[in-house]
Image 1 (cartoon, one colour):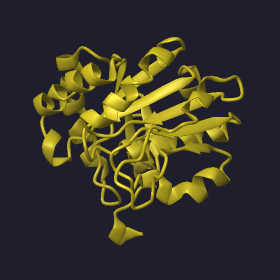
Image 2: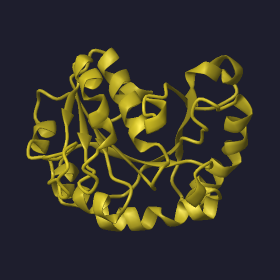
Image 3: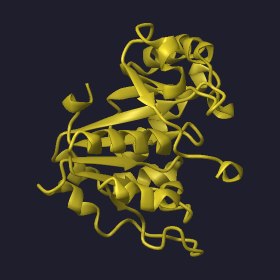
Length: 224
Protein backbone atom coordinates (compact mmCIF):
# COMPACT_ATOMS: atom_id res chain seq x y z
CA UNK A 1 0.00 0.00 0.00
CA UNK A 2 2.80 2.44 0.83
CA UNK A 3 4.43 1.80 -2.55
CA UNK A 4 1.30 3.17 -4.23
CA UNK A 5 1.59 6.55 -2.51
CA UNK A 6 2.83 9.49 -4.60
CA UNK A 7 6.33 10.92 -4.31
CA UNK A 8 5.40 13.71 -1.89
CA UNK A 9 3.67 12.68 1.36
CA UNK A 10 2.46 15.52 3.60
CA UNK A 11 1.71 14.88 7.28
CA UNK A 12 -0.47 17.48 9.04
CA UNK A 13 -2.58 17.61 12.17
CA UNK A 14 -3.26 19.41 15.41
CA UNK A 15 -0.76 19.74 18.27
CA UNK A 16 0.24 16.53 19.99
CA UNK A 17 -1.43 14.03 17.65
CA UNK A 18 1.89 12.39 16.82
CA UNK A 19 2.68 13.75 13.35
CA UNK A 20 6.43 13.55 13.79
CA UNK A 21 6.36 9.94 14.93
CA UNK A 22 4.21 9.02 11.92
CA UNK A 23 6.56 10.93 9.63
CA UNK A 24 9.67 9.19 10.97
CA UNK A 25 8.04 5.77 10.69
CA UNK A 26 7.05 6.40 7.08
CA UNK A 27 10.52 7.69 6.23
CA UNK A 28 12.09 4.55 7.72
CA UNK A 29 9.70 2.25 5.89
CA UNK A 30 10.40 3.86 2.52
CA UNK A 31 14.14 3.75 3.19
CA UNK A 32 13.85 0.04 3.99
CA UNK A 33 12.28 -0.39 0.55
CA UNK A 34 15.50 0.95 -0.95
CA UNK A 35 14.18 4.41 -1.79
CA UNK A 36 16.10 7.70 -1.54
CA UNK A 37 14.08 9.48 1.13
CA UNK A 38 13.99 13.07 2.38
CA UNK A 39 12.30 13.97 5.68
CA UNK A 40 11.33 17.64 5.71
CA UNK A 41 10.68 19.62 8.89
CA UNK A 42 8.19 22.42 8.21
CA UNK A 43 7.98 23.59 11.82
CA UNK A 44 9.47 27.06 11.43
CA UNK A 45 8.20 28.32 14.80
CA UNK A 46 9.69 25.92 17.33
CA UNK A 47 13.50 25.94 17.04
CA UNK A 48 13.65 22.66 18.95
CA UNK A 49 12.23 20.53 16.14
CA UNK A 50 11.63 17.09 17.60
CA UNK A 51 13.14 15.16 14.70
CA UNK A 52 16.40 17.05 15.06
CA UNK A 53 16.89 15.17 18.31
CA UNK A 54 17.05 12.02 16.17
CA UNK A 55 19.19 13.54 13.41
CA UNK A 56 22.03 11.03 13.71
CA UNK A 57 19.68 8.06 13.75
CA UNK A 58 17.64 9.39 10.82
CA UNK A 59 20.69 10.08 8.69
CA UNK A 60 22.19 6.69 9.58
CA UNK A 61 19.25 5.17 7.67
CA UNK A 62 20.37 7.06 4.55
CA UNK A 63 17.56 9.60 4.94
CA UNK A 64 18.19 13.26 4.17
CA UNK A 65 16.86 15.43 7.04
CA UNK A 66 15.84 18.85 5.75
CA UNK A 67 15.18 21.15 8.70
CA UNK A 68 14.72 24.91 9.21
CA UNK A 69 17.81 27.04 9.36
CA UNK A 70 18.95 27.25 13.01
CA UNK A 71 16.68 24.37 14.07
CA UNK A 72 17.89 23.00 17.39
CA UNK A 73 19.59 26.26 18.29
CA UNK A 74 18.50 28.90 20.79
CA UNK A 75 17.35 31.31 18.07
CA UNK A 76 13.66 32.12 18.11
CA UNK A 77 12.87 32.41 14.40
CA UNK A 78 14.26 29.59 12.28
CA UNK A 79 13.54 30.09 8.58
CA UNK A 80 12.08 27.81 5.95
CA UNK A 81 14.61 25.15 4.87
CA UNK A 82 16.69 26.66 2.09
CA UNK A 83 17.21 23.28 0.41
CA UNK A 84 13.56 22.23 0.38
CA UNK A 85 13.51 22.39 -3.42
CA UNK A 86 15.75 19.32 -3.46
CA UNK A 87 12.68 17.15 -2.89
CA UNK A 88 11.41 18.00 -6.37
CA UNK A 89 14.51 16.66 -8.10
CA UNK A 90 15.02 13.23 -9.62
CA UNK A 91 17.54 12.14 -6.97
CA UNK A 92 14.74 12.05 -4.37
CA UNK A 93 12.38 9.08 -4.64
CA UNK A 94 10.16 10.04 -1.71
CA UNK A 95 9.68 13.15 0.42
CA UNK A 96 7.89 13.10 3.78
CA UNK A 97 6.87 16.61 4.89
CA UNK A 98 6.19 16.95 8.63
CA UNK A 99 4.13 20.12 9.12
CA UNK A 100 4.00 22.17 12.33
CA UNK A 101 0.82 21.88 14.38
CA UNK A 102 -0.51 25.42 14.11
CA UNK A 103 -1.38 28.06 11.51
CA UNK A 104 2.24 29.12 11.23
CA UNK A 105 3.30 25.60 10.34
CA UNK A 106 0.65 25.15 7.68
CA UNK A 107 1.27 28.69 6.37
CA UNK A 108 4.91 27.71 5.86
CA UNK A 109 3.67 24.76 3.83
CA UNK A 110 1.48 27.16 1.85
CA UNK A 111 4.57 29.08 0.77
CA UNK A 112 5.65 26.08 -1.32
CA UNK A 113 2.13 24.93 -2.23
CA UNK A 114 2.44 25.95 -5.88
CA UNK A 115 5.61 23.91 -6.29
CA UNK A 116 4.00 20.91 -4.58
CA UNK A 117 0.97 21.10 -6.87
CA UNK A 118 3.25 20.59 -9.86
CA UNK A 119 3.93 17.06 -8.60
CA UNK A 120 1.95 14.06 -7.40
CA UNK A 121 1.31 14.37 -3.67
CA UNK A 122 -0.94 13.14 -0.89
CA UNK A 123 -1.93 15.10 2.20
CA UNK A 124 -2.68 13.09 5.32
CA UNK A 125 -4.55 14.59 8.26
CA UNK A 126 -3.40 12.83 11.44
CA UNK A 127 -5.91 12.43 14.27
CA UNK A 128 -5.59 11.07 17.81
CA UNK A 129 -8.58 10.37 20.02
CA UNK A 130 -6.38 10.42 23.12
CA UNK A 131 -5.09 13.99 22.79
CA UNK A 132 -6.91 16.52 24.97
CA UNK A 133 -7.96 18.94 22.21
CA UNK A 134 -9.21 16.25 19.81
CA UNK A 135 -11.00 13.81 22.08
CA UNK A 136 -14.17 13.72 19.99
CA UNK A 137 -14.73 13.56 16.26
CA UNK A 138 -16.29 17.01 15.96
CA UNK A 139 -13.28 18.66 17.61
CA UNK A 140 -10.84 16.71 15.46
CA UNK A 141 -12.73 17.56 12.27
CA UNK A 142 -13.00 21.31 12.94
CA UNK A 143 -9.24 21.94 12.73
CA UNK A 144 -8.82 20.56 9.22
CA UNK A 145 -10.41 23.47 7.26
CA UNK A 146 -8.06 25.89 9.04
CA UNK A 147 -5.04 23.80 8.07
CA UNK A 148 -6.22 23.47 4.47
CA UNK A 149 -6.88 27.19 4.20
CA UNK A 150 -3.46 28.27 5.47
CA UNK A 151 -1.56 25.53 3.61
CA UNK A 152 -3.45 26.16 0.35
CA UNK A 153 -3.64 22.40 -0.11
CA UNK A 154 -6.46 19.87 0.31
CA UNK A 155 -6.30 16.79 2.48
CA UNK A 156 -6.70 13.50 0.66
CA UNK A 157 -6.64 10.99 3.52
CA UNK A 158 -6.84 10.54 7.28
CA UNK A 159 -4.40 8.64 9.48
CA UNK A 160 -5.88 7.44 12.75
CA UNK A 161 -2.92 7.67 15.13
CA UNK A 162 -4.85 7.16 18.36
CA UNK A 163 -2.48 5.72 20.93
CA UNK A 164 -1.13 6.06 24.46
CA UNK A 165 2.55 5.65 23.62
CA UNK A 166 4.12 2.55 25.19
CA UNK A 167 1.01 2.04 27.33
CA UNK A 168 -1.24 1.44 24.30
CA UNK A 169 -3.35 -1.71 24.43
CA UNK A 170 -5.24 -3.36 21.60
CA UNK A 171 -8.55 -2.23 23.15
CA UNK A 172 -7.39 1.39 22.89
CA UNK A 173 -6.95 0.98 19.13
CA UNK A 174 -10.30 -0.77 18.72
CA UNK A 175 -12.02 1.97 20.77
CA UNK A 176 -10.64 4.63 18.44
CA UNK A 177 -12.10 3.15 15.26
CA UNK A 178 -15.64 4.66 15.59
CA UNK A 179 -14.00 8.02 16.33
CA UNK A 180 -11.85 7.78 13.19
CA UNK A 181 -14.81 6.69 11.07
CA UNK A 182 -16.84 9.68 12.31
CA UNK A 183 -14.02 12.13 11.50
CA UNK A 184 -13.88 10.62 8.03
CA UNK A 185 -17.63 11.13 7.61
CA UNK A 186 -17.56 14.70 8.91
CA UNK A 187 -14.65 15.73 6.69
CA UNK A 188 -15.70 13.58 3.72
CA UNK A 189 -12.12 12.31 3.51
CA UNK A 190 -11.29 8.59 3.47
CA UNK A 191 -9.63 6.87 6.40
CA UNK A 192 -6.35 5.73 4.83
CA UNK A 193 -4.49 4.12 7.74
CA UNK A 194 -4.78 3.24 11.40
CA UNK A 195 -1.42 3.07 13.13
CA UNK A 196 -0.76 0.20 15.51
CA UNK A 197 2.29 0.02 17.80
CA UNK A 198 4.29 -3.06 16.92
CA UNK A 199 4.13 -4.48 20.44
CA UNK A 200 0.40 -5.24 19.99
CA UNK A 201 0.39 -6.31 16.33
CA UNK A 202 -0.36 -9.93 17.22
CA UNK A 203 -3.59 -8.80 18.94
CA UNK A 204 -4.83 -6.64 16.06
CA UNK A 205 -3.74 -8.62 13.00
CA UNK A 206 -6.66 -9.18 10.64
CA UNK A 207 -9.02 -7.10 12.78
CA UNK A 208 -8.18 -3.60 11.47
CA UNK A 209 -8.31 -2.42 7.88
CA UNK A 210 -5.31 -0.61 6.39
CA UNK A 211 -3.20 -1.15 9.47
CA UNK A 212 0.12 0.73 9.61
CA UNK A 213 2.58 -0.81 12.11
CA UNK A 214 4.69 1.80 13.92
CA UNK A 215 7.41 2.06 16.51
CA UNK A 216 7.46 4.84 19.11
CA UNK A 217 10.49 6.89 18.05
CA UNK A 218 9.46 10.26 19.46
CA UNK A 219 9.61 10.28 23.25
CA UNK A 220 8.94 12.76 26.00
CA UNK A 221 12.07 14.46 27.42
CA UNK A 222 11.85 12.39 30.62
CA UNK A 223 11.70 9.18 28.51
CA UNK A 224 14.95 9.89 26.64
